Image 1 (cartoon, rainbow, N blue to C red):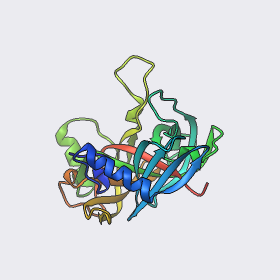
Image 2 (image 1 turned 45 degrees about the vertical axis):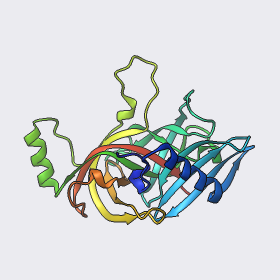
Image 3 (image 1 turned 120 degrees about the horizontal axis):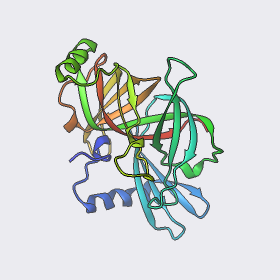
Image 4 (image 1 turned 30 degrees about the horizontal axis):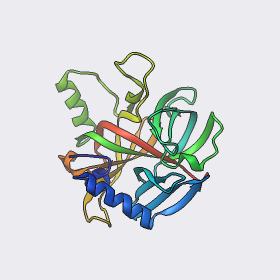
Length: 248
C-alpha cells in the first residue's frame, strides 16, 4: 500500500513499524527546540528526512516525512492555516507562486511545512522554498508527442505540458472547509534517479520536474512507476506537497 512513508523507501505495514520509526527519531534525531517543545530531525541519507514532534512533557505527538532535494524557488507565503486537529508543531500555509509566463500572474497552492515552528514568519512574506511532491497517482509519457496523443485518446481536457492545479483548495463540501496540501500537476522530467533508502534498503524513484513556473522534487513509490522513468519524459499526476524554507 502506497503511503507518504513508502514513497521515500520507508514501508509501513503496521502501527508497530510506525512506532519503530518514531523510536528511531527519538533516539537519533537532532533536537531543535521550540520553547519547551521540540522538533526531532533525523536525516537518513539520500534526501530522506523524518521530522518528529515532541511536546513539553517529552511525549511524541507527531512524525512527518520529507524529501530534501534541489528544487528551490521563490514562494509568497500568505497565511498559516489554522487546523483544530493539528498539533502545535504542525505547519500548513497558503502560498502564491508566479506562473513563470507573466510576473503579474500568480496561482495559489497549499503545502505542509514540517519545521514551521522554527521560523518567525510575518505574513505575507517571500521565501526561497524547496518543494517536494509525494506522488499519489502518477502517469508517465515518453515525450510530449505521446502526452498529447494520450490526451486526444481520452477525449478530456487539453492540458498544457506544464500545468498546475491546486486541487487541495477545492472541495465538494460546503464552506468552511480545511484545504489539503495537495495538487494535480504535470511537467517535464529534467533529471531522474532510482534511490535506495540507506536505512531500509528499499528503493523509490526521484525526478526533478519542471512544471508551471517552477521546479519540484517529485518522489514516488515503485508501485506507481509502471514505466521506465527517464530524462525528457512528461509526467502528470496528483501529489502531496511538503516544503522547507531555504537559507532562512
